Image (tube, rainbow, N blue to C red; front, side):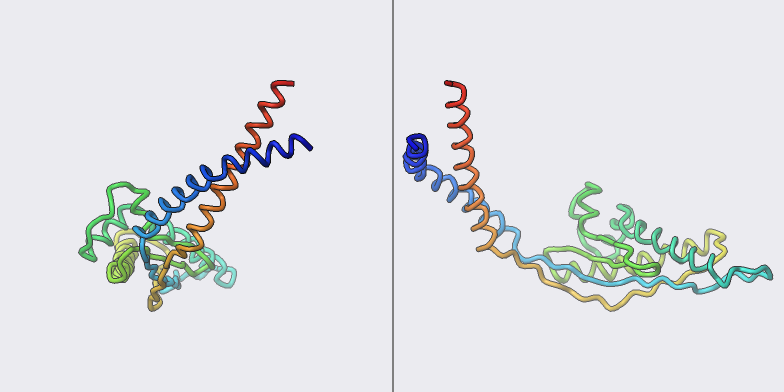
Length: 207
């Protein structure tokens, strides 16, 4: 019981310092979140279809291989969309400056996920709505050119068509009160727990 009272006295004595540190962490977080501001995401879907099927007199299992090839081409196209060189081509086509020369930074601006055998969900991220929409349009144009080049330069047995759905732009606004409040609470609890662990380890070493 005496140790419990000592912990309470210690907490009461250190609480002003911990509150000050927690407030400082919350203030820094607020500045960081405020600088980020509102961001925009342009959502669109790429639908991959079989434009021309290979003509053959052999049995093709009711088109099973054609459907399988379409599925594989969709997966390839999803990876192709986020290749750094294609993202750079989209920025150039849109007349926008590159966000950086790092491949990781570039790949944050465009994400592509294969969500169905013939469907790719594409998201274009930017702090500016007009730039996000321009980049999304340019990325779709670059992909159509690449698919056409693939058919012209290669000798694929199947020809595919890529249809893009009309884009829709969502707005991402950080919840500043929630984020700042969470940082304050987590920092304060972390400091209290660290102090308790420290005092417990000291008492254990003295025994």
